[in-house]
Image 1 (tube, each protein chain N blue to C red):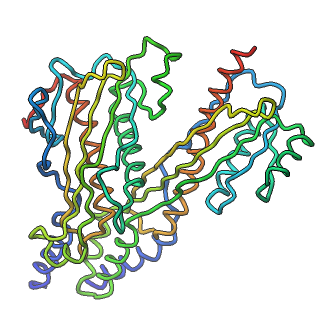
Image 2 (cartoon, each protein chain N blue to C red):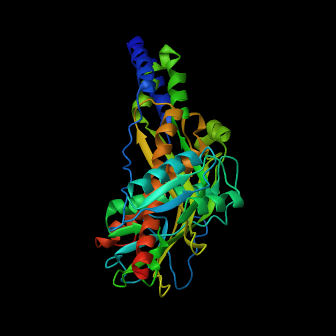
Image 3 (tube, rainbow over the protein chains, first blue to last red):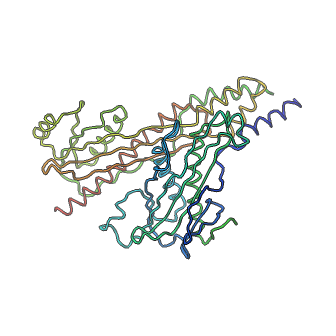
Length: 214
Length: 213
């Protein structure tokens, strides 16, 4: 029994260590001179317009995620991920309750609709989706081999003026799971975590929080 | 001690795999506009693939329960001549057509069950299987996307068209099979997408009706 206990512990560590998606710094976050992006504890790199806090807006329209920068690979269909992400974002944004309505129905922008309702538009695009290699993760995942990578760029704008209120660059990697961990599961988990971090950030800022790592 | 662990995990695998998949995603509610009177006849075409079967059935149920539409369906796809014949013969008001673009589900259950099974196979590693099963959840998803359009037979104009999608996620700690998760989640995605799309049609229909009245 004495030798079994450490073995079990070690195996559990190996099985569960690094499971799930890990937040890392985004690669080439697209800031400019006017749009200065800073590190944030929920999202990777963030720009938030001065004095903007998501308050006073009733509706957020979540548009389809652009997949133009991502090539289809075995196990990964970018269009499938785009549908998954859009609905995951909508679900998480609904849960935090900052907006009266979270929708993907573009008719909220129609001039016939209630003009007093203030709308924000959330647009996103995949900068990278890489399923990595399960075999490599199993063999040397601890050292970074075969990791899955997902990077999402997102923006929130005013639909009329096109003014940029928010921009973020969010990156997640999947390193280890049981027998290397399934690539698609890692990618979907990354998308769930990216959605959660968006909603947590929006909730935090609308409750008076500040952008930053503290 | 180890034998007990192994027995617990083995029984868990057996009983878990036999249980139903608990679903927390609610079905969307149908939003029928007020004052839908006088049954309009709708001919439902398209959705002829295997994936389309659920959609066809759901559309029929949705429209029938609206009390404003009677639904005609054809078991076989109709060519233009047959379609015209049905429209004239049955005095059809609208033709609703469409197709399923995507209808799929996935889960991590295969991996999870394989890992649990692997460690259960050896008595010495059975506790790992037990802890692994207890500390990791199964996660499943289903997504669907479809397009639909409605043509007014009187004017031969498309009065409404929409391409839309939905996706649902579930997770739990039971030991259930990947197949069971997919079978449980897919119909929810189908029902919710049909309801979402036809609610949009009903809003559009009610708005146009008010304008024309």
